[in-house]
View (cartoon, rainbow, N blue to C red):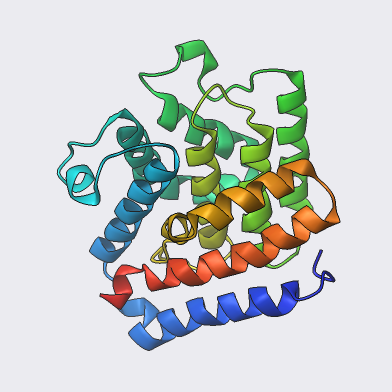
Amino acid sequence: MTELDGVPSALASARDGIDALLRDRGLRKTRPEQTTESLLRGAHASAALEGSASSLEEIRAGEGDEIAQAAVRVSAGALALVPVINSTPLQAFARLHALAGKGDVREESLGRPLDAEGAARLGSLSETLLATTAPALLVGALVHAELISVAAFASHNGIVARAAERLVLVSRGVDPASVVVPEAGHLALRPQYESNLRGYREGGRSGLHSWLLYAAEAITKGVEASPLRD
């Protein structure tokens, strides 16, 4: 995939943007409240992409709608899964869905694929994650697109997918303090986001190529949304 025209340079440019953000502000000086704010902004953006009408201010006050509450639960619990996604990705995906679907999905369906096909696709994705040495931004983009395209869980697949992308960036050392807001990048580019996901789902080299180029652009927007820029 890294041989696709323009993809390596686009991903490298996006990575440079993250590195510059962390270098300019000093990663060791990052405060816990900045990580918390990044996660909150990410929850708002992810919820909006899932159909929530709640504002960031409402979510910050704990007054968001059900979709927003699901996204906040995922954001609040996501970073605890950093070691899990490196060792047992399937368990991390299941836990993300359990957080998102709590109170909305039947207990027996939380964290469990809907059918054998979904389970097989998740298993394949997990194996790829454990085996790949590809750049983290590429891996995160593919995990995101796969989880949405497979739609293996009963609900909240988009929220799970976007949280998993963030987890990959943290666990693979690109953004260890989780201060970039990739979800906000996708929201800022919503028409392109939805169009490129459709292209990815339809399959083929062209859809994959376009998604990866788009993902690099979205990460750059996510850097701009970081609380380190405030």
